[in-house]
Length: 385
Image 1: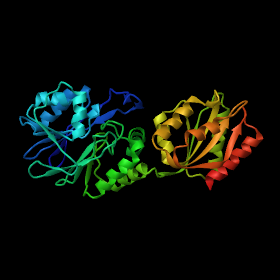
Image 2 (image 1 turned 90 degrees about the vertical axis):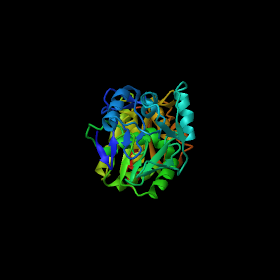
Image 3 (image 1 turned 45 degrees about the vertical axis):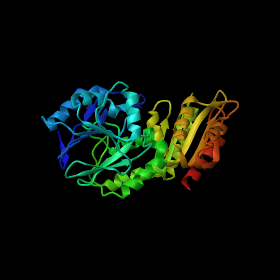
Image 4 (image 1 turned 135 degrees about the vertical axis):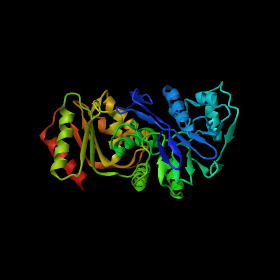
């Protein structure tokens, strides 16, 4: 097993059997369930792994420990992809002390109602645990993204064990860009809790951090400012990339034609980036990611049963429930006899903060006409301001 630094070992596992993470997110490159061992005068294991990899995980631990027994199992997050093997661990190391906060143990008893844990240690914000030459400090991070979440800081090694914060989709034996899958992970899973992430970043700013060890994705060692700045942008609902995202649904191709015409007009006018997605055919989580990435978004859809086409309705729901805000939105609506999509779209965003609507709304009745092309031209000009 890999010695990350100062006798901190990686004992996690890669999962290439999974197709949907949390039953909904497509993960073509699998997932990593990270776990760590801190070797000192006393030994601490940081979190467990998914239930399907318990034996492999215990073998990884034994490879590091040999005949030694760990003193502590620290539970930072009770979601089953990180806690499912607590029972296997206790059965293997019955004298180990399980460390968590009060909410951790409430959840632990819910997941394992019949599990007897002989030794527990309940910790609070700022409390410390000595392993000998190093001291661990516990940092509570409620709703990032469950209420019991806590992080652990090793001041001797300047390592922050960050629970699900700074995590990403993808196994560790696959080489891929960090930001793309970390962004999709963040807005899919953590995105609603920007205020709580901001509070955590404030706590982290007071620490001297050289390494971040998340529960998913790679260990972050270099250019930490890059990751911290992205998290600050994401959690403050700021604009990461200059450009326009066009999300559309289309039944017979006419709304698609309008969306593609707008894309072409924006490119002609020098828009730095234009992303476009068919909501019926592309990964919804990817589309949510782009909806938050750009500061300007255009929603193009048909009226359907006097409402909005289902994929567009679902997409807007995903944005709204993740506290969508600080964005400019344009609408292209289509309706053969009674277009109502624009009115319905605006109603769905009523609770969102700081939404600016474009003055130009494109209203199509069935097929594109000369007046629609002029409207799209005007919309492109307005988006370029």
